[in-house]
Amino acid sequence: MLIAITGATGFIGQRLAKALIKAGHELRALTRQPSAALPPEIEQIPGDLADTDALGHLVRGVDAVMHLAGAVRGAKANDFDRPNVQGTRNLLLQMQHEAPACPLLFISSLAAREPALSHYAASKHQAEHLLVELANERPWLVLRPPAVYGPGDREMLPVFRFMAQTGIAPCAGKRSDRLSLIFVDDLVAAAMAWLQRATTVRSGCMSLHDGQAGGYDWNDLARLTGIACGRTVRPWEVPRPLLDLAASLNPLLCALLGSAPMLSPAKLRELRHPDWVCDNREITQLLGWQPRISLTEGLAATGGWQD
Image (cartoon, helix red, strand yellow):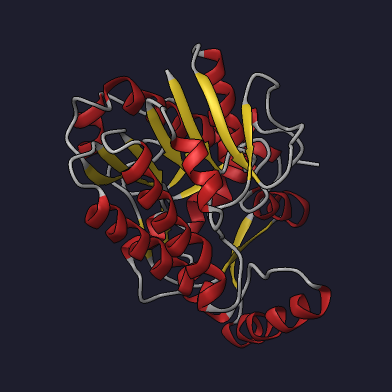
């Protein structure tokens, strides 16, 4: 099959692209500039989600589209709306012209379940609704993964590294807050399972996790991380005023440095939400997919964070 992919140079996208190539598919990837991070077999289309000509070229004549690109860092609503909402709209409109029946997989985020929490969550929620609105008769699936970790991750691995170095598991909210996780290769396997059945399964929006029913609280995360790195790790509820101050100042500092902030007051509301737990029943029933990699196994397979 000829597959079009956005976000192929990102953490998840690189793993997915390599899996697709290994499975014998041809890939066409949207890239802002030529990237050596991608296998040479991939046809790279210069452009971004604002470039409608590039998007038209990307999806022309393909057998399936996998949409992963988007912004995860920012301080203002427009930092997320421009790529995540308008960018998704641009892609969908080009698909209407160039690939009207082509199946579409959208890797969204569990954050979309709570759109009032942050600009990021709201943008993902809006993008999902755009897909439903503009899908017409095409087959589609939205995957809402929880926190994804693994080799190459730049968001979760610093947290695990901090735990390993300090023996402290920092909780933005309460140590009883619960969250699900998923190893990147299990998420990639779910995408591959969809590709095999894309034209025959029903469309929908589904979450997925690593098989830990009910997710983890911070006591669990501290204990399992401690086992993986060979030291005692204890959860610590970071004082709210301290985190509030850091979240308020970080966007200002990043603006001075010319970078996009990860921590902001809106992001802090996400981090303090007490329930980011997923359920696998629907996606397993739809695709026959099941996670294979536990947190203990995933941490062992991810090098570098224990140093």
